[in-house]
Amino acid sequence: MTDGAVNVGYTQQAQAYIAKYKPKRDIQLAGADCKPAGLPITQRAGSPSKFMFEPGMILIYIEQASMARFIRLNAEHSEAIGPSFLGESVAHFEGDTLVVDTVGFRDDIVFQYGTKQVPRDPKAPPGPGPMNRAIFGPHGPNLRMVERMRLADKDTLEIKLTVYDDTVFTGPYESQPVQTFKRITGDAAWLGEWRCETAIANAYDPEKDSAKSVQPEETLKRLEGR
Image (cartoon, rainbow, N blue to C red; front, side):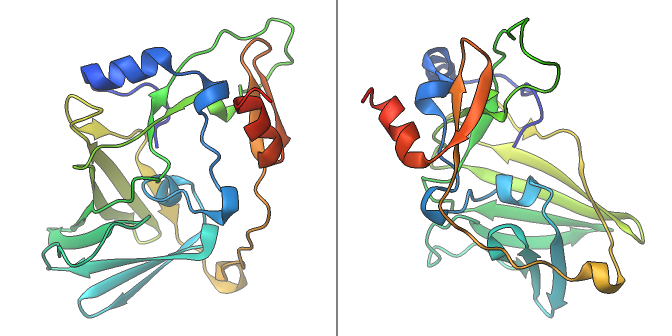
C-alpha cells in the first residue's frame, strides 16, 4: 500500500504492534491457497486493468488474480453487502474527478502499515532490499479508502488514494506517489489470463538482510520452530 514511511502518526495500538513486529514471524503469506491480497494492494500493484462503463456502474477488471471490481455510481453503501476482499465501492463525480468510496473489507486482506527499516548487511550485493521489510498487520472495523480518479490527459488516468483507519493511523493516510495508468491500444491491450498455482513465500533472514523463495509449508515450519 505504501511506498515508504507513512505521512501521519500511528495510534498507540499500532505503535505497540510495530514495536513487536518481526518480519520472520509476522510476514504475510500473501497468495497462499490462491487467496487474493484484497484492496488497496491489488489495485495499486500496477497490474494491467480494463475499465468498463455501463449506466450506473463502472467495472475495473484487474489482470492480477482475475478480479472484477464493481463501482456503483451515485449510490449509497448497502449493509446487505457483506465484507469482501475488494470491499464495496460507490462513487460520484466532483467536476472532472471520480471520487470512489470503499468500505466493507474482510479481516484477512493484506494490510500494510508502512515500512520498517532493517540494517543492510555490508557484504550483501548492491540492489534493493527484500519487500518483506514492509509492516503488515490487522486493520480495524472502520477501514475506509477513498480514491480520486481523474484523466490528466486523454491517455493518462491518475488515482490518488487516501486510507482511513482509526485503529492504525491518527489521521488520513495519503499514499505516495499518485498512481497512474496509461492507455494501451491495439493487440497489446488484451489482458493476459491469470493462473494461480501453489504459492511461493519469501523466507526472510533479518540477520543477513536477504530472502529466498520457498514453499509455504517450509515457511510455516520455520515460523513454528519445527
